[in-house]
Amino acid sequence: DEAKTKVVGTELILSIGGDGTILRTVRIVTPLAVPILGINLGRLGFITEIDGNEVLSNLPDLLEGAGWIEERAMLEAQIGYKSFHALNDVVLRSVAVRLANIEAEIDGAVLTTYRADGVIVATATGSTSYSLASGGPILYPQSREIVLQPISCHLGLSYTLVLSPQSIVDLKVATRDKVVLSIDGQVELPLSDGQNVRVKLSPHIARFLRIHEPTYFYNSLWQKLGGGRIES
Image (spheres, rainbow, N blue to C red):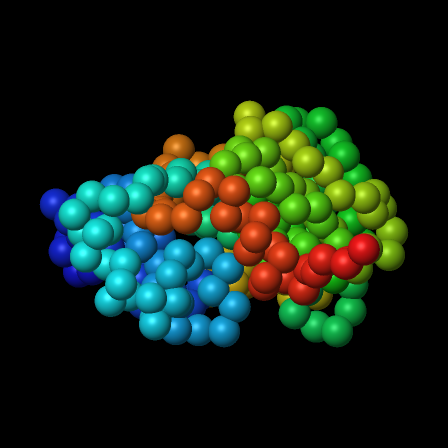
């Protein structure tokens, strides 16, 4: 709360670290939508904009107004009277080394009962994270679509769904085994049998200051996610 108070009136926030630092920063900034410049001192740095060794050469121009603002969609997870906002994903997963039963509805219509390690609801930003590792698709950064991705599904609909920005996803725990709700992999809450988590697009957005061309994303895929070019 103290950090949120200090953000009021701020024009730019420097997030120094890795992608995890960015995720924490976004939660502090929400709902003020102050632009964030990500400076990578971590390993992957997929969401960050510049590396630590590029700061001195780029920061003066950025502080003078250079660059452009990229907007990213976020998710809102509602459980009871509590709401949480996520830049990457909202995940329901089993705590024990066993499968969980999770009933899924979309816009009030029954979809399936997943018997799986868990279920991921991801944004475009999160589509290159846990969802991708679970077999999900990659969405372009400004996409507002929602990815619904089961984790190691044994029974139920095992395919990935890409939902409209207006979709409302209800995930209900239907098992006595321990299940946890994870927000961006950083905030975790235990869930009990019968508890429902409603996930939809958040009214808030994350804003990032960029210096690279809008097509930077595809180069990042090539550089940071193991891509390569076959020479003819």
